Length: 194
Image 1 (tube, rainbow, N blue to C red):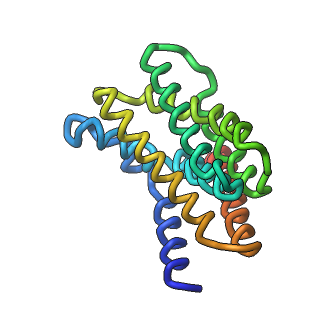
Image 2: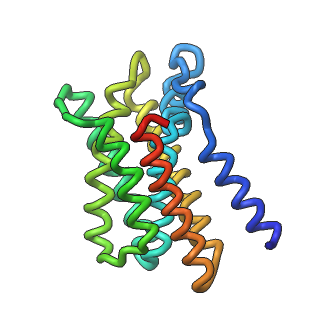
């Protein structure tokens, strides 16, 4: 295994092992941007779902490489705005957990759908992720907080894209699909109280 692949695997292992113990930074102490940026990075459910979006987009290839993650970030910001406007949304946490399992499975089976269909599928879950961010904003300034979590989300998507693009050929697709399967299992583990 090359050093680049070893480094990529180590980086992904580090990213996905983040502990929720440090969960949310105080915006008064760290600033609204850092509070938003840290939010997706300290929740295992968020990390797994975001990386899985990148994995699946890498398997789809073509325009999906950037349109699927972009659809997630854009719809997530729409969900955030809905939460800020006080719009109720039911089953936010269960749908977020379901997103880990479902998007992980989409990558695991390398479901080949149109880019538009993939955008709609991840967009559905992204709305719930964004609503959760809005519901947990606390005293942070909305614009800086939103910019922070949007950038962190895009970086997590990029990590999934990197892993999915790093390995070429059929063996590479199998590694990416295996990472998707592990993501889905991680979501199941979280759902049963892990």
